[in-house]
Image (cartoon, rainbow, N blue to C red; front, side):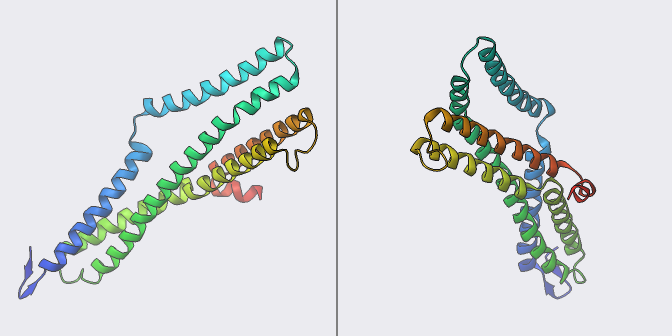
Length: 217
């Protein structure tokens, strides 16, 4: 395994084999993160998010039925902003980590494939190294292209920053929140809800296939 005729492949094997193993292990880890979790776990997270949204809607509905003034309901809405910011940033970091991990597999695998391919005609084992690296690169590129982790992370972070900017401006009483408190609160609620709606539209657009997105532009 380490030699062929008079050629010693020991140094090559010590580089190629760990490189292939590292690339494949990284790919398997990312596949596990994305699809390896059981369906019940993924459903439970989604169910918790849905339950949270339902609870929030019920609170607003109950407040409306009790005849609570609008500005008090808007205060309740404002109090939910920190939790919304935390959710957006956690999701942004999650997608950013996935994107960076897959990009690392692509970079390492591409370099390893080029190196192994240059020696593939000498050793049959290196051909399998090339196949493994090429497969990991292809799968990683497919995942990043289809799920668009970078775009999702960017939009989530952008929305979180915009919401935080409005919340800070409201607390400090600076533009555009320079009116009385009731008007400022109404404007803050309107701006935050507008940002959330825009974020949902972006997520729906990213979930569409390429043909659907091209048709809507």
